[in-house]
Length: 329
Length: 176
Ligand SMILES: Cc1cc2nc3c(=O)[nH]c(=O)nc-3n(C[C@H](O)[C@H](O)[C@H](O)COP(=O)(O)OP(=O)(O)OC[C@H]3O[C@@H](n4cnc5c(N)ncnc54)[C@H](O)[C@@H]3O)c2cc1C
Ligand code: FES
Ligand code: FES
Image (cartoon, rainbow over all chains, first blue to last red; front, side, top):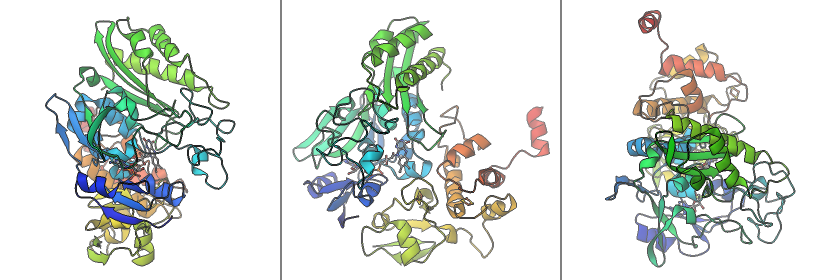
């Protein structure tokens, strides 16, 4: 690890002032950035600890929830309002990492955690445009079982590893950001980028931008929602494929639906093609599969991950069938 | 800066790069906490901070200014073993013992989470009280790997201590 200066911010203004510049970074629970700095994937000269900023989960005037970026993943998953009104978010968080890591990890850090592509981590032996722009991508022709099938580029086929972010995408969350020019908000779906020819940039945030909170809008459909993660072992493993889904039924007909996929792209993937294919339809296996087919029509699997479109399709169909019957708490 | 480890005020690290794990082991000579992977993947380094279980290998010690840290050395209040330590012996909850301090600290944090009602990935109802069934313990302890494969004994020890199994009478009541 290269040497760095540790500073602690007590206010948002402090954090933005101390965190300005290309060589500084914010420090949440440290569960990702400490590892990346130890492996010299990341080198920062200053770490600004933002874990003492707001960790509160509060009701908004609109009837949603505002979650301070310093809230731990555990605190969000166990919050009563999240469990009952946005169950897919509790379930997504609880499907990720381990209890110890969830106790340390913050919301801000979870959003900005970096890919788990092994070539990205392998500083000694591998080419990676995300880590070292212009060096090439060893994953494209290499071991790419965990990699992207949608929205990838010649430069990068990495996936975003977060489970929580998949639920936040489906829930139409809003990100609150404080930067050099003051406060702004952006829709969650616009936070993360597709790689294009700049895979070194995971998000649209500028250096020094601080995430202060995540806002969940009131969303009736989310009360009947869940998260299903498919992975190589039953617990404590990143997703191969995951689905966050919410449904509202009108008799046997799908009145409203929200869907997002994890493990398929450089960003948590909102299913903008599957959702309209489901609204107003009678719930059936055929309809669920057709909606998934619409979403994955443009999928470009790599050597080792041709299983992903079908796995994602089956997972979506299973989750929607359970939700439509009302089987999922 | 300073923090409290097992009830004693101790100085913080000289360099902010030092992890809580290295600080405990190398500076404070509390070698009960183990280093397995040093990257968050095994749970051997689990300690309790203000009663919450965390991984000390991914924790920068400077971040824990003013916090109360409990390691395996600080669990038992007297010279006797903590009941969970005794149960690990009774139920063969280890072979080489390397993962054991992390397993035990983790289980104590886990029991507190369950009492507080924190659900898990396998909880059928997110809003219900937690009952520490075998499945629940298995999932909640998945962050602690045991290379010797003593998991069955580990779960037995935890279940016997933290979630006593139904006795003959209570299971008869349940069946009735
Ligand atoms: C073994 C292991 C298994 C894991 N498994 C999973 C899994 O299955 N699913 C999953 O989703 N995750 C998993 N994770 C990842 C884990 O969820 C993340 O490491 C964690 O959420 C990061 O949060 P943090 O607070 O520790 O972030 P940090 O490591 O402190 O920071 C991460 C990044 O966010 C930036 N940052 C932090 N806070 C802010 C802020 N407020 N504003 C702007 N930038 C900020 C930092 O500068 C840094 O770049 C796993 C991690 C490990 C080690
Ligand atoms: S040593 Fe910390 S998790 Fe393995
Ligand atoms: S007892 Fe040897 S690793 Fe668990």
